[in-house]
Image: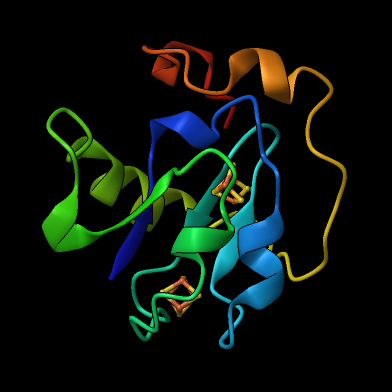
Length: 106
Ligand code: SF4
Ligand code: F3S
C-alpha cells in the first residue's frame, strides 16, 4: 500500500485525491490518509503531491513508519475525497517543516 506521511499535515494540497483511480483517499481537518485495503499500488499519486508526502510502504523514510498505522486507522472513519480543494491557507509556510504530527487533528 501507499502511505500519506507527516509533510501533508497542515498543507493538504489534495492533488493526490484527484488522480487516484480507486478513490482511496480519506479527508480529515488538516491531513489526508490512504485506505490500505483499497490502494492498488498504482503509484500515480506520488508525483502529484507538492509536499512529497506520499511513499510506498516499503520506501517509508526513517521516522515515518508510524504513518502506516495512522493511515489505516483514520481511513476507517474519515470520508472519501475525490475532488480538488484549495490547499490549507498556510500550506506554503508549513511545507517541509519537521515534527508536524503534534498538529494532526482527528
Ligand atoms: Fe490511489 Fe494509486 Fe496512490 Fe494507491 S498508489 S493511493 S491507488 S493513486
Ligand atoms: Fe497531502 Fe500531498 Fe495529498 S499534501 S493532500 S498528500 S497532495
